[in-house]
Length: 254
Image (cartoon, rainbow, N blue to C red; front, top):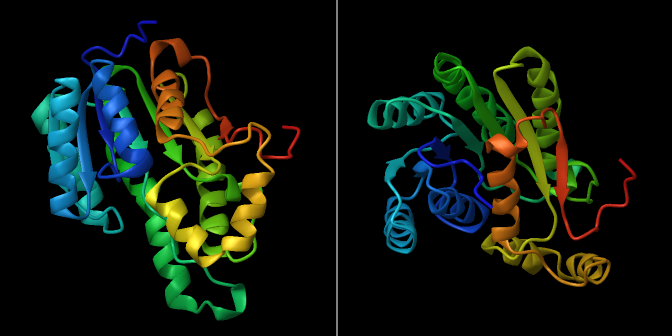
């Protein structure tokens, strides 16, 4: 199926590994021109080389820390300057540390808000004028299933990603009809992040894995496929949606 992404310009944050890397590679494979960003230069460079080699796509690597307001603006600015415009923004990053509520101080909460919520606010704010200039655009935010089905000890992530979901729903009305915005809530996806979480809460993770109706962990490429569809012309009638990509793990009816 041709998704119609040939020549589209995309920014994918947190693209050096895991879900972000898979999204960037999938979009490039579909013919999009992709700017990838990440904090760590060696990993970013390796991701760039891998994606360029396997897809033959047109890429740009931008080192930056989306926890910093100036880097959010710079990443968008450099991508637009290089490619001449912007059609797609994928807000993706890691997640704050695990910890129970009584263990978390104000600094932990401030860092979590900057990382999970304000990075999304700032990147969208920088991207929207360029999308409006082209008459269309698509934004996808990557959160996690814990944002809609909370897990004890994940409070920093759950609270801040809930803010992202609420923001996206609001913006789906404010930015329409030119720009669509959706949120993905991946379940247990086989990534370095999941392996770290499994080490810290092995018993609970093992119980969750046993509870997945499809009987396995997800692949990052399966999340990336959903992003490709939502950001393509074939997904243009979907906006304001939070989609669980979780093998049926969520027990919610909506």
